[in-house]
Structure formats: structure tokens, C-alpha cells
Image (cartoon, rainbow, N blue to C red):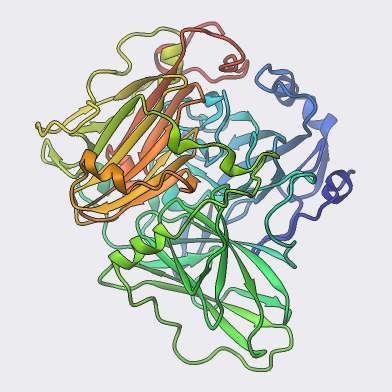
Length: 575
């Protein structure tokens, strides 16, 4: 067996909640985490088809094979037993530790009683929206069946996550971390840390996901969550033993459903080094606001008196505060944690927006490629289209819905990507959602905004509600060039950062405010743009961006996978 260190000349460190080593080159792991020889999996023919599929076109990059089984289980994350979704018996799910451009072949076996999908949050799926794992691109995996995902973190590094995209499964778990490490010859702008820890933080409900979904289906909005978890744990049941004088990397991702969280470590400052694949100017922070769906990487040096310190994640901008805590334990400590938890920052929405403006691209650093990030002069490119998206919370037929420019999205029985490929009419509409708010009565539709490959677009998220928003785009990262209060207007472009705005896949939009992004549409496919706040996504605050070229070529997009599941009006079609 070839270890990661043997193959790539680097160590991929431990997760904070489970050991490394989910899979290695040309091998995979069973449900119990034991190595399984590849030939035993090839007997079924499933992985052989996946390897031979033309979607994986770079044979020079290593292949990594995984088998994941999705089941229900009963645990008590907030003290009371409840049903959750486990992957290979784990909550949170297995951590994917991979290297830029690895080919990932992941056989997902669904042992739930309902259809299921995973989506790979932040993985761009270059030319490959077939593998995105959302209902607009993939048929869900039926109970008792399986599907083999085939994808690459192509030209990416950084911290990402995966989670269920079907129904309200996300409220039951099934989520985990994806850590993409740089290739050995690609430098990073900081010294190798002495350890690397992944922290999955998020709000959580004691109520089961089926009851929550039924409540949403009945037209009600969700109540306030019951708690916050750090890697599946709450108050001080999570501990890290680390050494004085050492510097450690923490990868912090908000995998929750509803609320912004503030992350802090008592008595320690944090050096921000990377945000969702972007190396950033390395400023120091006492705490960081991490919005739903977002990820940040920080370095923390253990330079304080040797004792135990609290690690804290708490809800922000909420009348009631929910808190989860862990313990940072100096290995030579003889003093346990005591006293109150460190307080959240005193600044509120305006201060949080000011913090967000300090996140800047490190122009001289490399990302996944050898060329510096700053070599792409995004601020000098003329935009081809402006899209203004206004979120709202209308009642439609007496039920709570969420909408974009007055249109609340409804899922079709046929994935939009399949309908597009097979030229099936009547599945989605490219005219129902306008690219500016129109102020009309709210409606429902399966809405798609058409764009052209290589467009360079400006998107403005206008939030006229009193609630924080978090917007995500599959298939891309984008430059977050501006935040502002009140109404956006073309004159606000004079405030944009056109020099060193960072790129990321999920951005916050503050209450009664706007956020502007620039997107280079260089990835053909059908891509979901959605609220990362799952109640809002589930009830319609989403749509799809169709990035299209009349020239059909492998240079633009891979062929439909040979193992693609067919459903709805695509049943019986030949591919």
C-alpha cells in the first residue's frame, strides 16, 4: 500500500474528530475502515465503469477509491436520543483528505428508506456538472441502491465540505469535510504547521429531520435551533491536546442550517491564511464570523501560559445565544478550564461587515497553480451582464415560501441537466426569472437563467429583509467585490474592490444591505445558485444558471457518465 507521504512527499495531518486515511491510491476502505483490495470491488463492475468513463480524462493524476454506506443511526448530540444520518457509521461523516487534481471514485450506497444525494460544497466540478449531486443535475439514489461519483478537485486547494442535498436530510447530518492539499511543488505562503485540525461547526435541532421537513411542507418556518455542535459535540466534550510554542492550522466550516457563528479561542489570536481556496492577506483576529456554508483556515500559535483554554462557536445576531465549546489543552497544563466562556465580540452587523472587508487576496501567493493569484486582473475585465437578485419571504397559497426576484423555485421530477441533454421540453423555464427584481406577485417555477460560456458577469444580491443571507454558487468561485448598506445602485460600483478581492464560493449578505460579486463563467454546465440557509433553499430561494456554448466539445464539457441514473421524463433515454 502506498501511503500519502510516500506518494506525495508530504504528511496529511489528522482530523480533529477522526484519524486520517480514509483511502489511498488504488485502494479504498470498508465500512469498518479496513483496507479493501481494489479487485474485490471491481468484481461488481461498478468501479471499473467509473474508471473507464471518459469523464475522467487525466490519467496522470492519482485515483482514490472510496465506498460509503449511508444509514440511519441514533445518537444524542444535544443530550436526547435522536435519529441521524451516518456515513460508514460516522457522525460527522468520513473526512476526505486529497490532493489537487486527484481523481475521486466514490461509490455511495443508500440504505435509507428514501432517495438520497450528496453534494460537494465548493468543489467546482470542472466541465462536469454531471457529478454535482443536486436535484437539478442528478437523479437521487433510490433506497437500497448505489451510485458511483467520479470527480476531481481540479486546480483547487483548500477546505470544503459535503452534505446531503435531498429533502431536509441536511438537518440529520450526513455531512463531512473535504480537505484539498497542494501538490508538493506548489508552495504555500506560510510555514508547515505542526498540526492540522478540522472543526465542523453548526447549529442543530433536537427535532428529527422528518418532522422539520413536514413542518416546512405544511407552510411553517422553522423555529430557532436548540444548540450548536463542534464536530458533533457540544459543551466542553471536545478536547485537543497540543504543545506549547507550536503553531497549528484550524479549518473551520459552518455546516449548520440557519445561523452565522462566531469562532474564537480563549486567550489566543488567529492568523487568517485561507478562505475557500483563496490565500489571503494574513491579518490577525480575536474572533471570526463564519456564515452558513463558509470555510476559513487559521493558524494559532500556543504562546500563552500552559493551561487549558476554551474553544467556542456561538450564534451571532440572534436574540438568544447558543454556544458550543471545546477545550484547547496544553500538553504541560495542570490547570483545567474554568470560569465563564470568552465573550463574543462587542461589534454587531456593521463591525462584521468591516471585518469582511479586511479579507483580501494575497496577490503574490500561488493557489493550486504555479502562477500567482494576482496574475488574473479581474478588475480590468468588462462585464457582459448584470444580474440583480432580491430575496423575499412571500406567502404563496397561504404557505411560507422563499423567493428570488419574486420566483420561488420548485424541483422538477427530471433533473434539469438531463432535460437539457435529452432536449426534453417543459421541465424548466428560462423566462420565469427576470435578471432584475420586478416587484410583481410571487409565483413558483423551475427557474433557469441562461448565460453563455466565457461571459463575465456582475451579480448583486439585494437583501431587503431583516435576516442575514448566505448565497452559494456551485461550479465556481467568485470575487466578492463589495458590501454595502441599503439599496444597491450602479453608482455603488465606485466602492468595489477591483484589485485584491478574494474569491470564494459562498458569500454573506447583511440585513437590509447588498453584496456584489464578479463571476467568470468558464465552466459549462447547469449550476445551482442557492441560499445556503437550508430552510430558505428548501422552500424556493434558489435557481439554476445554465452556462452554455453551441460548440459541444470535451474541451468545454465532459460527456454524460455511462452510469448516470435516469428518472422522470429521462427514463428510457439512451446514453
